[in-house]
Amino acid sequence: MTTTITYAELPSLVGRDLGHSSWLTVDQPRIDTFADAADDHQWIHVDPERAKDGPFGGTIAHGYLTLSLIIPLWSELLDVEGVSTKVNYGLNSARFPAPVPSGSTVRLAATVKDVTEITGGFQLVVDAAIEADGITKPVCVAQPVFRFYA
Image 1: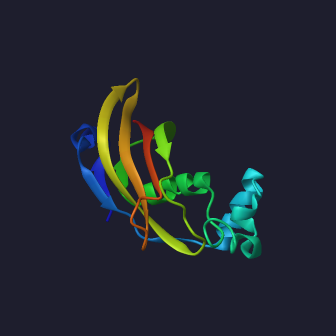
Image 2: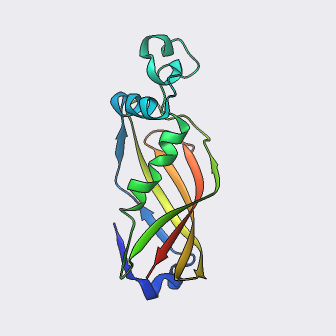
């Protein structure tokens, strides 16, 4: 469910759990497309036959593919009205505690950790976890930093 607030209300988000996004499938075509874009064709990602005998029993998504999914999933969680620009400012941290097997479905859980006023806007630091259906550990834990400008 999307939380919709105004630009002026951004500071009120500190500590707020934004819930979960919808589920998104990470299938082999998505993994292959990312491999082409990132020029990372390691067999654990793109060779299903060889990967069957590998450490994960099949192909897995690139960690950076999983991390990149924060952006589309995040857009389902928060809509800020009255902003001229939204910027992905970076990351304070990112880890990949578990692999994402091809064909998995993932979703984002997010809590706003901090909101700071910056020149022309606000900066949000978010505690984010990407979960995969059927996998106990999160597949990605990160602390993205977003900026919203009036």
